[in-house]
Amino acid sequence: MKPIRDHEPGEGARAWPAPPADEAPEPAGEHSLNEARMKEMGYAMVDLAVEYLKGLEGRRVYGPVSPAGLDEMFSEPMPDDPVPFQELVQDCRTRVFPNTMGIGSRRYFGMMNPAPLPVAVFSEALTAAMNQNAASWRHAPSGTAIEKTVIRWLCDLFGLPRDSFGTLTPGGSLANITGLKLAINRKLGRHLAQVDNLDGPGEAMARLVFYVSAQAHYSFDKAVDLLGLGRGQLRKIPVDGLYRIDPVLLEEAVEQDKAAGLNPCCIIGVAGTTNTGSIDKLDRVAAVARRHGCWFHVDAAYGGAVILSKMYGSMLRGIDSADSITVDPHKWFYMPFSAGGILVRDGDFLRRSFLVHPEYYMEKVLRDGDESHEIHSNGHGHRVMPDTRGFHHGDKVNFFQYGIQGSRRLDALKLWLGFRMVGKKQFAAWVENDIELARRMAARINRIADFRILGPNTLGICNFRWEPVGPDGGLRFDDEENDQLNRDLQELVERDGDAWFSYTILDGRVALRVNVENRCMEQSDIDRLIEVIKRAAARILADK
Image (cartoon, rainbow, N blue to C red; front, side, top):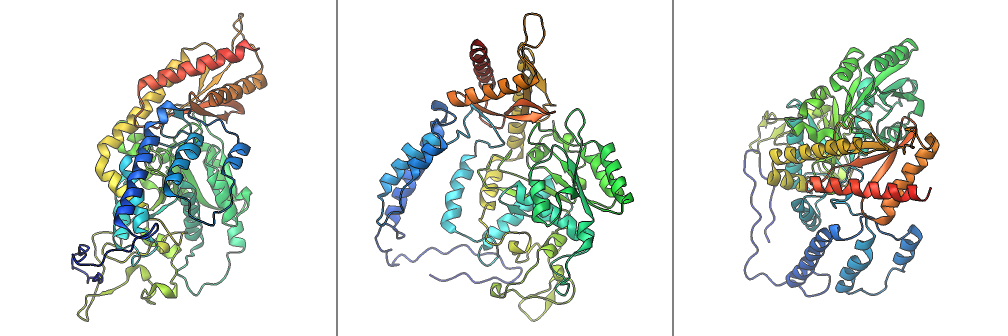
């Protein structure tokens, strides 16, 4: 088979040639590339996936087996001899499926885990079949072009300029860590492209301070630790009555740190907290960051998809001022895990911050002081400047030079196929429906005796607390007893398997947390959940 050679700038990409008709057949065997065997396995796996998804509504949302029981069920030595494929299929059906969380079920109201798009599900098989390492252009040529396109779509969606860029990550945690690393580099004037700078940051690093809402994701605690910072360098600013960062207290904290000789480095805005779905006033937070010369990072892992909606998109006003944005398409873009990413206003700065040149990647390295504007040969001995249509358009982008990861899956494929198959309007409609269902849930809960709504219900999250009232109109139990009642209610529903939702802590008290994030969900699913909750509450009180 004739290999594809690199084409010169300006030439079109070539289609993969068909194999010659007289090409020798592949050798037979269980693990060889045998067409009939591959199809047999593929059809069986497709049938199994469809069987799983179709069966979600007919089984428990949460399996009954304990951790110890599961460990025992799957405890076995690594086999010396092959296990027949059909036995493996049956093991998935009888051992794996019954003991999974029913993510994708219309009775699952847990974390931000959506029912994945079918096209994205099956694109994962293509990703595995091609097995491209999306770290470098040479090992994933079309994959690199696809990821560049997806990144461009996302940057445009959030209103970032044409010289913005980004990289996909396994999830929001790694994206948030990357955002803080960029903030440090910008504040200290450092990046990996400075090949002659071997000095450590020392005292300058110890003076940096970061600011975030007290409701922010735990990944920021991990980030300061991984980046060699002290936990005290992350200031957790109190929130207002809607669980948003208080801009006045934020400004005061920055001023106090500057007066103390510290160096404010990064201010983080949250577009959709995990607890309540609250969205910080991003425009006001951005203004504080600008006044004090801080990097402005926005964690939009959950709420970022709201930008698609004309009805609710204004809730993210100010996000286009961000220096970096965390996105998580495996949340409200209905993609299967993993699919996160970070978008950066200055794409070239992102590259310089992670620029390394391993000898084995065979890439030319210029030493002219600005490696972001490399000059390419046009094949005729002349040198031409890069394409001006956008950041690194036409260049051989190596994504290992744009982030922390080395080897990378081609996660961009499912996004590229999914975005094109669905379109922005349908994504927006799904997001709007989820928000509307959560708000209807809150309205119904508010009308039920003994239940009290908490939080803003800004996005698809409804927080509430069960507080039984006595005949005299007063609370039957004190705060600590009510905390335990709410835990008991969640655990009873979980054990029964009729639905699944979580609980959290708000203002020091236990609150029940329902998250609506399922493009297939309808009002009848909300009505059913409320009946499940009422029945569970009645059973608990009957034992009191």
